[in-house]
Image 1 (cartoon, protein in one colour):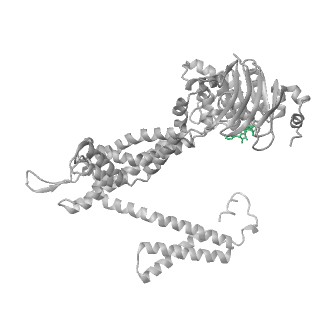
Image 2 (tube, each protein chain N blue to C red):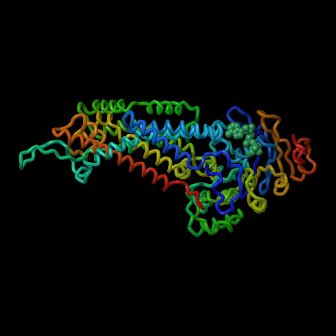
Image 3 (cartoon, rainbow over the protein chains, first blue to last red):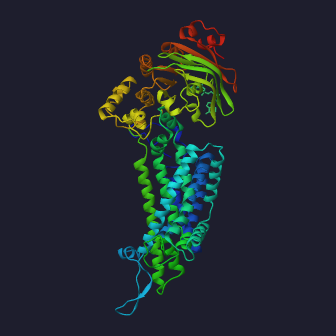
Length: 366
Length: 259
Ligand SMILES: Nc1ncnc2c1ncn2[C@@H]1O[C@H](COP(=O)(O)OP(=O)(O)OP(=O)(O)O)[C@@H](O)[C@H]1O
Ligand SMILES: [Mg+2]
């Protein structure tokens, strides 16, 4: 569509190469036309947003294909049709995401306040002065719990995962049995359903400490089980991306393997490794079932991950709905608040991943 | 500070694949030796066995002996790291470290080997190595900039500077000029001539004129066909190889009537 528009500073000349093309803005006009048609149709059969989107897409595709077929040629018509299909698919895929975000933000924003994130509790209790039942609404215990549990899980999984990846990429011979075993086990671990990880941690700690052994540590172990394979795989991939040339260059200088790995290979891959780890954290921070099993849930503040139930944001969202307190509305609101906080945490983590990648990226600019 | 290299009945394998068969060659100290031959005949492979870089590839191994000043490189208990500190290498493709600046790249061999070096000594070493590699004038104002910001030819000269900064006794060069313009090529050839005074140099090249210009002796390798191992056909003074070689195939190759 922009073939003949770049001749800004040159005098216009006759150009027979542009004949047989739809006018420049035809895509936009066709979309608008499709939208109006769809809206009109909706006027007849009743309105809903999803239908509007779908009908607009369908009308647009039909119109642009036939227009292009008439004015242009088959190749271009097909090109426009497929581009249209791809864009429609993209918008359709985006719709649930936007809708989810919208719901979480609109429902959670109401309760989000400084008080919500700075006080703990949520259980109804008797106010000693007025002898009335009041419920405080705070998520501090859940924020602290989430940060501690995912922090601990990260602390466990990153060294194990990174070292495993280094072993797989740098040390193990491709056909060595240990490497194949580790590879197989990592694949198996990747497929473990999160509830099984929760059960594992729960029963492990029950065996070790007796019944009701809920603790943040137990939940962190469960999350580690889920996190380690992700960390291994992403670190492995990043280490493999480091060109063999660099390792050889280092060896050829008489540098030992250990120094080559720590000073050449890892620094070269660090941006990707950091991104991978951050995304792995973002992945497990929203886990509900395993934390629910291993750390149970509570409304009271517990900052000791070694003993006692611990609340976390995803579990708070779940229990707020499933086991509401006296004040059902408040519980539900708290659930949405927790969900929103969780989304925000994940956004922050993703941003961090970006920033880390930018800071560590190999410098190639002049 | 220069060493001789003696290769005796060397077979070089990639896993089960025999890439180079039965090579024996004596390289005198303070000399330049050129390896020439058609693509795939095992020049790089043989070169890499001379500083034990070959075994970095999984499954790669050798049979036979390589003696450096009489010491067996492949003897039991020999640490490849020690070997590589004495025998440096420049690769076919430039490979500066992407996380390091130009200066850090030159100093990499020293720094990564945990040698202490004072700041002024480091600056001197950087200048000396870059001057020797004919890169100093182009980069002296941006030593702190990333090494990968240089052009391909500049990167290759940076790699040469990096290799000579650790002052190896033998320097192996695998087609060091294949990415360079004629002027840089000439500079590298001058450099090789200077290095000859203190190092032993082995250079792989596809450029006949280059081999004729820089080397004292030339080894011609050939391969009977795909899947067959490469072999040393003829090894003699460079003038002999280029003017009256013993073998018909050598003559065909150096005169461009090959295949
Ligand atoms: N990593 C490897 N694994 C298996 N075989 C290899 C490997 N590298 C090289 N070979 C084989 O070894 C033989 C010799 O290769 P080599 O790279 O030494 O050739 P060369 O003479 O350097 O060629 P060129 O002039 O193209 O650089 C070839 O048959 C090649 O296919
Ligand atoms: Mg080669």
